[in-house]
Structure formats: structure tokens, C-alpha cells
Length: 273
Image (cartoon, rainbow, N blue to C red; front, side, top):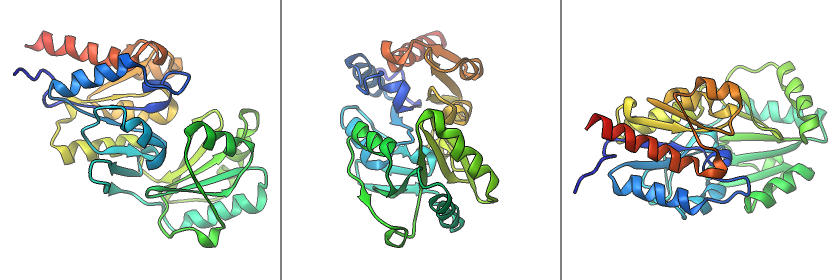
């Protein structure tokens, strides 16, 4: 049987890319992923979500490779329930988070560690986030947290998010980096541990050449990811500056962006046959 997508790795962001604006995977995208996998391709997800949050979507798709979660600091294989690769936050992260807890009492703070999500402080945005992603979290104190952290998520309404950005920029740090991953989220991750770096690590682990590594995402936390792929794709709903840096722009997330990406790859393979 002909396997047109053999040797390709397609990695997709979730929110704003694979999911429509209602947080649902369309049947069009489900069928496109199945076509890609049946055609010999390796498909995975690369998301800022946690292991538990991403699982509900992994179960709906023909995912046949480890999944990149927490914006690139953790790789999780749902088929074996193992962590084949990770990049934990350094010890300095605890002091940086404590400074936020001490000086910014209105900021929601979540910590991702392995499979679990911990809430150090909840605000209205935190509760909306947990409800939207339909995940359980452990509410705890700093002393009750595990030693290994993979991501810190700060949450504020869009009109106030700049407050946490300004605060974090004033507190000296060396081994972490920050990114704005949504209009209400500001994240701390290990320095250099982003989706793009994780994609390279995954491609190497799977024996996929970088020129056949395809990344599709829509937001600023996807920028390094899109540039890291041999083919960088973004949906029409992405900001204009992201679209300018992508190799290919497909239809929006509401119109089936993953189906658009698979259609593009189908044409690419046909041309080279």
C-alpha cells in the first residue's frame, strides 16, 4: 500500500489551531489526521496545556507519537503513560513565584508538574480556565508542591495582564524565560525549553529529518515552534505578524486548519512524486 506521508511528522497546536473557537475538534480535522496517519505520517500535538488537559483531545485523534505539553518543557507518551523527555524549571523558579505571591495578591498562579496541575492561588480567571479546560487541579501551598515543576502560569483579565508582565521583568532572573501564551496568560518556562526545542528533540527521537517536520500554530508562543519546523504553517486567524513568518497560511481554525495543512502536504507530496 502506498504511504504518501511516510517520513513526515506533523505537530499541531491545540487552541486556535486544531480546536475551533468553541474548543471542539471538527470531524473534518479528525478525518484529516486519520488520513495523514493512514498514509504513514506521524501526528502529534504541541500545546501549552497540561498532560491531563490535553488528554481529552488526544483520545479523539489518531495521535501516534509522544505529545509536547506545557509549551515545550515536557513530552508525554499517552500510549505508555511515560515521560520520554522533559526540561524542569530550575530552583530559582520558587523564589520568583514567591515574589509574585507576596507582592501581587490578585494574580492567579498555577504550577504544572508531570501529570498534575497545582493551584497556589485562584482568581476568577483561574476558575474560568479550569472550567474551560475541564480539568481537576490540586489546590495547595508552596510547601505542599512537588520538587519538580515544568511550567508556571500567571492569570489575569486581559486589561490587567500587563501588570504581571511588568512585575516579572523587574525581578532579576537567569535560568527561566517568560512568554505571553494568551490574552489572559503569562507563563514561566525553563530557559530554552519551548515548543520549537521540544519539536527538534521529538524529531530526533523518532528519526524524522527536519525538512519533513511540519509545525502548525497560531499564537506568539508558537512562533519558535513554527520556525523550528521544516515547514511552518499557521491558520488564517493568526495575528498578521505570525502569518508573515510562516511558510504556509491555511484556512482558519473554524474552517478546519489541520485539514488545510494535510491538503497542502498532499499536494506537496504529489508534486514530488
